Length: 320
Image (tube, rainbow, N blue to C red; front, side):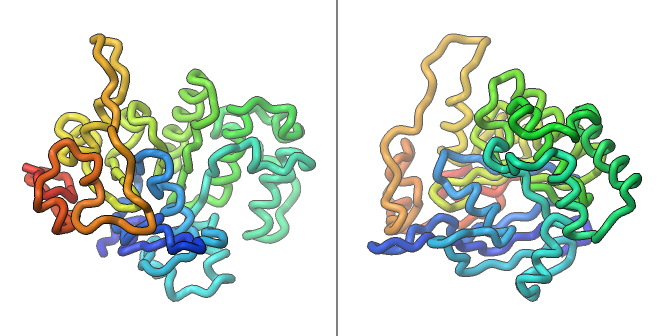
């Protein structure tokens, strides 16, 4: 692995146990994120995007279980770390900006106390004056005035809460930030503000970022590369411009065609049909039941994620 790689994920596998068999939530996913790069992780709800992120962070809760995978962060192979060592790595190297700021902040604590806890948990007791300046500087980075530090979460709007979560996430200057649908449940204008805040912070601090979501329009504006997930599997990874100009996987193409256009009136493209039973994926391609281009080979042989004739990697027999 080169020195330019911030995160390398190999064969990450996460299942959810049920009385009738395991749900294959993340099925052998592999990708990397370069230093300073923003990678978008997209797909329909339930495709495994957030589970993959929580697998990287070792935050998968019961009945979920991480069955395999190799995670390397800034050259540190996390498989060799025990829980206490990994807890120290979390937030200092890897940070999560969670989905749903309304449920992520402690309603009984002021903003100052919540950011202070994040810092002092990992760095120990701080000089009060320096800590105050540091917290106010963090709030300034995310576009919030210093007075916000004295407020409780219920006194803040949804967008303000989300930006407080961003401030907590970047408080320890991590090398990689995972933003898990950080703009969902917000109105369009506030979504834009939060997205711009994330982009500004990422560029100003030079951190790597994984942006998780299903807003393809937002991804087109914010990330350098896009990784497309379907039913727990990566089906395409490509540079953003290339993906939107020339998607190689049928699922990627349908996702892009589902974006409303103000330039022309046309019916929105939908992914027809239903996905397979997540406990029992079919032999061959996992997208075969919904693919408009399916052929006999697709039902027999599972395609590997391989480099296409351009910069993208795609898992499709019919690419090209």
